[in-house]
Image (cartoon, rainbow, N blue to C red; front, side, top):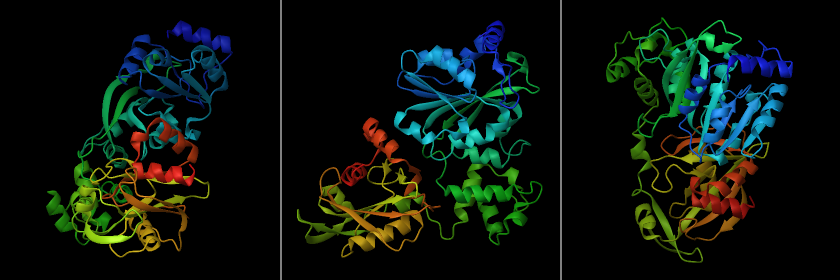
Length: 445
């Protein structure tokens, strides 16, 4: 879209660019094409674009992806976008604030990518809403204020490196793509912009850690940037931690790399062990092996039970919030069954001699870090290939969180509306543990 096109479109709409909405329209066709190319779109992708405005980026993105959701706050621009792009049914235009959009609706549409020329004043809020944990996006390209982009992509021992850097980089690899001059926008902003690319960190690139503890520790460490960490953290074990990390006891927060902050987080957990070892202890547990009527035949190790597909016992627990949303967990990649799949709020096997109800209460505590007084039985499910040859008792309870999810067992988790889960299963059943799918269907989802 050229400058003359922008002026004509604005005149046709009787629209004057709004400072309060951060409206600065891109007037460089080559730059718009280049920006969209960084997404590496395919016909399988669903693309969400924030603040498409007059469609300078949309006109290149729409032909390259399978479907699009455009989120535009200005009603006049939203109406124009509808007329221009919704003819073939692949593009949906939403007239709303991007901060009000429910990102969870994107999960059934994966693979998904995100594009945005963001108003500077909402960049941080947008980034954490759309890139928070969990996020459905496999690639994010944003145009943001240059100084903010430098902070996101910064490395240790630089002035731009801080808590924001680490909170984003723990989950995302951030690449500063290019500086964008103010002259390519109309009206011209007072500062330069930059294009950045965010891609999820591949599994195993960093050691797993407790995300909430990591965030608290990083914020504490950078709360007074010039102070030494030993004073800010107030940890008597800091000298030992500093030696293990290979840093000075007088080190400040900006001197620690992302990997060192992760290691420090794990060291702050009393008695924390290697996460892979915790999750792969498949020989130490002993289960009851049962017949087709759920009667105990003998006992065997977890390893042998799973290897030989012997019938055994398990519980699934659905934890709902007051809004009626269901909490789902994403299983750790270290799990011996269904690694990296989405599953029930909590689930686990019965150890030999244990009771279904008692096990349900135990699993809620161990996997979610909460205490509940009772669970309600929803269904009894026979052992089958779908359940992994487990007789499953499905329970429900209610809790609003927050939850403490053990990284050895659970990668992440979130509440989801039932309608989103239903659509997600229909579109992408491969994203879920089969035992959850069976439980969800038996419950009536």
